Structure formats: structure tokens, C-alpha cells
Length: 385
Ligand SMILES: *Cc1c(COP(=O)(O)O)cnc(C)c1O
Image (cartoon, rainbow, N blue to C red):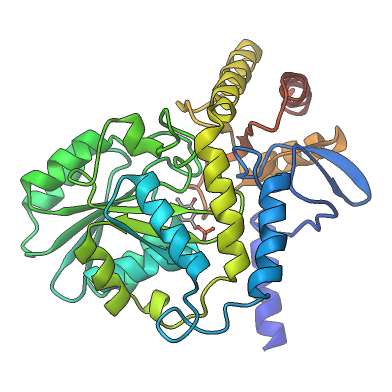
């Protein structure tokens, strides 16, 4: 086994695809510590700066004192506490839906929902740049699986027109995680409706960030439960904790409770995590200044990057990738940034298409303007030909 695996690893390294973990020595924040030194952090998903917020941390600690450390069982056995239940009710109100259901992670939510709702004889249609968990959910469901062109409504319509299945599920990221663009949700909703398909939106990077109240890409575009009947959101990004939820009508949620295997056959999240998330959800809703500050930082970054002639993507969200192209060049640029004390991850295939390796810059409301300017200076230096 060892020699066979070693050969595979060597091949990966030769392609510039070897991945290494960095060991963090501090909490999340705009400045983090690794390898014994401080770095400006521009690669996390803590968009609102809540992962280490004192009120969230206090709710976590109080939650652990009240509920203990572990959930103790799955939700359907004896692991569903009043903390989980209250969070679900608050998430339903936040999302403007009849009900919400907690999952332990976004990955599990996507696998569970797609497999619970579709199977042999059905069809799942997905944007080709969807998150891996949506793609995997579609592949594991046993349904006929196909991908349409990125944000290409005509390509989706063509596939829907040629689809003979009675039950059809269309799934899309709300905000694409490696590009930062927002899906054409009104058009996707209209296409799904006209072919009798169900639209599922994974808004991992939109919730908390987009929309006047942080309601995400759907609020931003003025859409509701009738347009996108299945909403998936994660709690580890803008909300700074962990876990995920699915929100929708009563019948959807009851169906998932009966049939979503990744909901049924797993231990509930620690109740303290639910308490911490309730605190972060309150902050995310009440402190609209975090979204405004984030938007201003995004504008500042884009203006500065354009002035430097960097190749940005068409994104107005806190995900602001700088396109590099070759894998080795992206890694080298990321290393030069690190030498300057700036941490930006190089994202390579298979996470993104071949030839589009990039520096995935992400901004947070916890950053300040001077930090964004330091990032721009470091990028100019690191990408100098
Ligand atoms: C991060 C992410 C997920 C997975 O969520 P986790 O809670 O981290 O498992 C799912 N979908 C998208 C679009 C994501 O960005």
C-alpha cells in the first residue's frame, strides 16, 4: 500500500497539486498567527468577523456549562435539545420560511437533501461550478445527473426541455465559492417553474453578507420560498460557528426528517454550538454596519486592484479572486505574499478548472482599510512579472 500511495502522491506533487495544511496558532481574525509569526488573513470565510466575537464566544461557553460538551445522540433518538430547536425556529424566521432543519455541516446537508428528494428515475441539474458537496449529492442520489454551463440559463432550459423525468431538481450555489459571482436566480427560478422543476439554492457565501438584512442572495434579488423552495445555508461562514440548515415549507422539512440519511444517522451538533450560533445570528441581523463596512472594503479592494491592473473576476461579493492561471505561478505568488506577511490561499484544480488557478482573496468586516491597502501593495509586489 505504501509504495502505491507514495507514487500517487509524487505524481500529484509533480503537477503542482500537492496540498499542505498550515497550522494556525491563534483564533480566526484579520490577523492570525502561524509558524510563530503574524499574518494578515485574507483567506477565511469569517465575512462578518463573528468567529471570535466575544458575545458568540460567551454564548458558546455558557452553552457548554448549561448543556455539556456533546449532543449525545442523533436528533431522532435523544440528541435534539431545546437549544437546537430554538435555533431552528430562529433560522426559519431569519430565512422567511415556514421551517428550518439543522445539519452538522453544509456538506452533509447537501448530500442529505438531494438524496432524500431524488433517486432513480429522477433528474438533478446543476451549475458546473457548484460546490463539491452539491455535485457529490447529485452523483450519490442515483438520479440522472447533468451539469449546465456556469450561470447559463439557456443551457439549463435546453436540458430541462430534453428531460423526461417527472421529478426534476435544479441546484445552484447562490454565490459561487471560488468565483464570487451571484447566480442568475430570478432566471433560474423562472426556468425551473416553467418546467415544473424544484430549485435548490446553496447560499453558503450569501447568507449574512448579501441583502439589506443579511438574507443572502435571495433577499438581494427579491426572491422567496415560492421561487426557490429549498434553501441551504451554512453556519460556519458569515455566522462564524459551524453547521448548516435547510429552510422551506413544512412538508419539505418533515420529508428531510424522515428521509435525509445525513440528518438521521449522525450525532447532533453540540448544543453549545447551537447557542453560539443563536448569538451570532442575532448579531448578524442587528449589526447591519458589518455588511456596509464589508461592501465598502470590497469597493476599495476592487478599485485598488483595477488600478494595479490585476485580473479580477466579475464579483461584488467578499470573494475577490485574482486570476493567475498556472498552478505553480499561483502557488509562487501565494508564497511571496506570505513572505510579506499576507496570507492568501492559492486555489488550484480540481477545485477550479484547469488553467484558472487563482489567489482567492476574501474580505471580512473585521478588516480595516489600512489592511486592505497592505494587501494591495503586497499583491502588486507578488504578481510583478
Ligand atoms: C463551504 C460550503 C459548503 C459546505 O459547508 P460546510 O458547513 O463547511 O460543510 C457547501 N456549499 C458551499 C457553496 C460552500 O461554500
